[in-house]
Length: 196
Ligand SMILES: Nc1ncnc2c1ncn2[C@@H]1O[C@H](COP(=O)(O)OP(=O)(O)OP(=O)(O)O)[C@@H](O)[C@H]1O
Ligand SMILES: [Mg+2]
Image 1: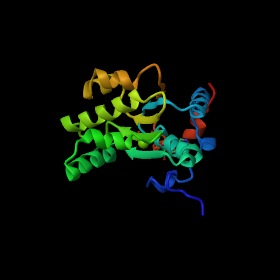
Image 2: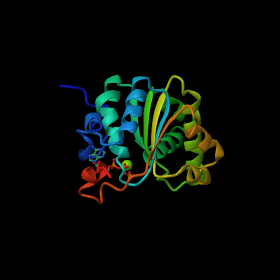
Image 3: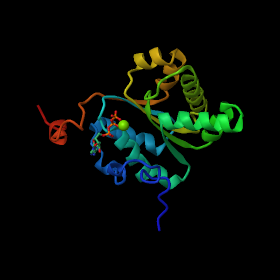
């Protein structure tokens, strides 16, 4: 049986994502081209920011299913789960949270979905800044996919300038998903490709 531990299903994503595939992904052609080029030589960050229901999580699932799962060196986290995992481990081992982040960051690929969907208390911000700082420092050899509904200015307001600078660095592939919510529009595929 095929090992699907590292797929969308294996990471506990909802069943609507189990069969997600890059060949089915409906993003603007320029975005598709950029994503396919990035995945051939993945490094630094791929950042998708913008609209609710734009298909960002679908893209994460498609990357896992079609490419990253094969590497078996990938982890997928929703932002809240990552922060809680680091906090729990820190509390259990009475170690420091930097070493737990270092352990997680050994993975070549990390997918961090829904950045910003946390309460953003001081310690939550600190954990995320340490995580983003570590991934940025390892950018030439590690690849990180981040999705968020937050705009760069909101990232800076909630976290800080250092966080924004690392996430929106010119080393990264940054895609603004500024189309409407696909969950609200039954005909989104038709409308999305409508020619004026
Ligand atoms: N080919 C496709 N490409 C992208 N999205 C798709 C595709 N087919 C269906 N969708 C659907 O569009 C809907 C919204 O996608 P998704 O959950 O990935 O959005 P999101 O950008 O992650 O939203 P949020 O910001 O709320 O997390 C989902 O129901 C998803 O399954
Ligand atoms: Mg999502």
